[in-house]
Length: 113
Image 1 (cartoon, helix red, strand yellow):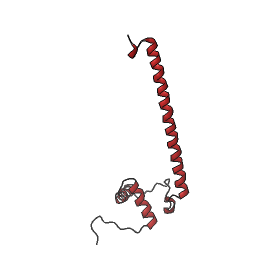
Image 2 (cartoon, helix red, strand yellow):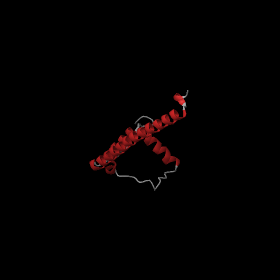
Image 3 (tube, one colour):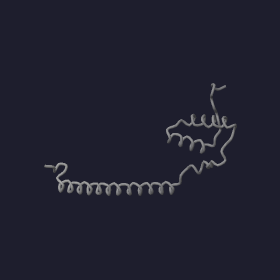
Image 4 (cartoon, helix red, strand yellow):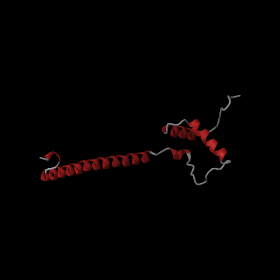
């Protein structure tokens, strides 16, 4: 007989591995997530929302093509962000230069007499 609170289940290995991997990527213990699922199941008298899709274990694995596409998208987003950052720096430099000219013309700021 196991210890109090012990749990044993016969999951499909690919399902259990995908679940453990997902929990680990989120920094959570898979046993605690299972416990929370059980609490929700009991609290809702066994209701499982029908609108929540249950992916197959094989669907949890991302194909190399999907991973490459996601990485390509991420690379594109980073490149756009870097270009945007460069444009922002140029914009601020232009604004500061114009403010400097205005202050100099009006004798304000560090150009005050």
